[in-house]
Image (cartoon, rainbow, N blue to C red):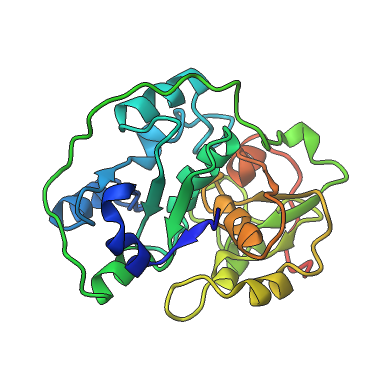
Length: 267
């Protein structure tokens, strides 16, 4: 299944999808829900990154994965079952929406796509907007065996590491949230903006294949807290590559555990 869906295709078949709004803001945690309630794709259900798609922050990072039992319960509460065709979107080019896409793919749920261009693409196309909140009918999602494609900090040795953060954070010039500045030694930087065109949509597969062309097999993607890393993972799939592993703890876990960091540009 194509990991991306366009606004026209979504609009013409909206009744066949369950749509989820993942708008989120690093500074103002109430902004995402407020934006959703002010206007969303009709029928879309709001998903809270911090409470629905992550366990509480700690030494394992700012957005560690939830317990698999809890995640299955969340999916059921959101009205998702194994046969649900999920579409997820945000307002930042898919950088947050990709987290739900990757988590579902990680448990073997293949029927999931990210809205290319996000909410802005939907608005720009002139489609209808819903307001308020949508309460889904709950269902049951059987508890999966676990998340696949997950790498811990102790499993990074010898792997190709891709840092999906902005270049200034990778180089250690700024660090707004984590204890140290810099990157995991040996990691290369392919920031999320490398995946998108000026319109906020993903680049075409051939161009993305060039962006990731010199990345060897067995790559591991990471970011600050395991969210934006999923955007690079999505881009690699769009480019025709296999879904890479994700270091979910990412730099927030790495730096909180006072592990060595590098600064400057390795690429």
